Length: 197
Image (cartoon, rainbow, N blue to C red; front, side, top):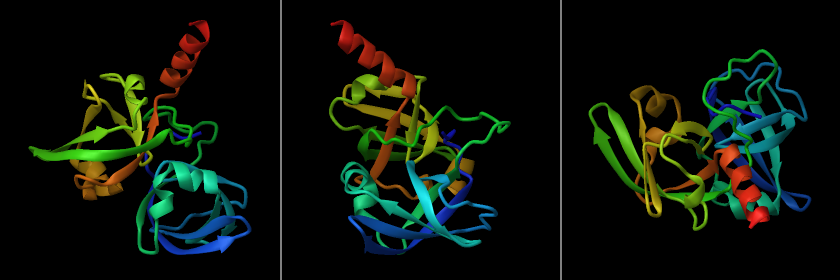
């Protein structure tokens, strides 16, 4: 479980085949401290399990299912990613509850500067737009954001200068693909309504 508040940035250092999966080695910008084997870590919004670790690097194995449903399929050495360690009891619950289970890949449809902030419009995969509400929450590449506006098949968010600096979102351009996780409550409400229909 995560909150969508990014704790570090990382860089993909290598990508290799590993027993029916792919292994990524990732280097963090700062000391990871005691990141244990088996720990969960969100990598640009995707919850992955640590299989090897050093003070600044860790490795994760990525299944074909995860590769098919996220932007990880396109990650190569040099890619910058958002990192968040999983919650522990007593952590501050900023952001919103994020599972790290990506719902789909969205596309940046527009980027505009608004003063010092940046307004992004995203186009979610078909079917997910109904789970996104104005003033609701989404996680974009693992970053907890408030939805400012929803219009047909797009939604807009505004990111402040701090978020642009400490995450990869500041480097996004129109046409870029991002991992999208809708609010967990919206997902379950939609499922309940389906079963009652």
